[in-house]
Image 1: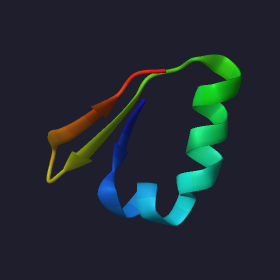
Image 2: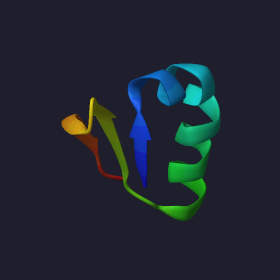
Image 3: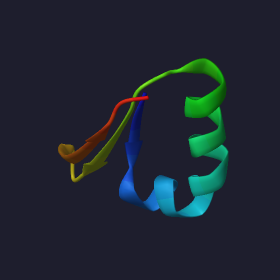
Length: 40
């Protein structure tokens, strides 16, 4: 799942719970470039 930094800030806890529940990887991007990658 690709998420912008702005979306991550607004929905941080919800995204973390989705990763914990489903094991889906979240990639946080800034201006289309992923500075961080958070695997489950």
